[in-house]
Length: 132
Image (tube, rainbow, N blue to C red; front, top):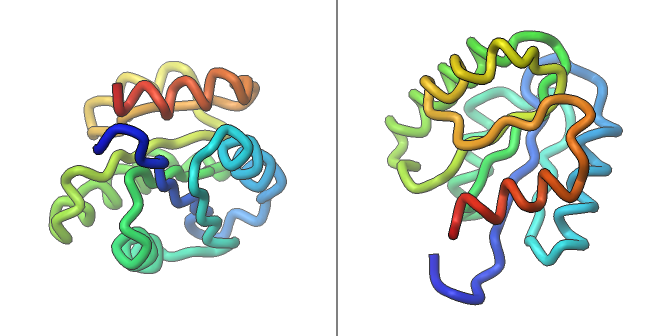
């Protein structure tokens, strides 16, 4: 990524998870930190997330998952990203993520994991560190 280019991040809520307050608050914190944030809204399919990421030319896809389905969702989305040529787009996930699942998510190729309770400061630092 070029120096001084704003990080573009898509915040997405996959599946039937209807809890979006956390995702919206994180989106605002990232925007206030100088990032360009696109919020997809609730109930997005993985195809819709890929389509939005492609159309918006984002640097990061940030999933907010509260349902406990983070492993299969991230595995499938990461494969779809490869298929569609989004190899330079970073995948991150936050929400209800048990700490024991973090290594599994990293093996899948998730660039950063933000379990519930992660501070805005740590999320911002984590996203920025992907481009250091």
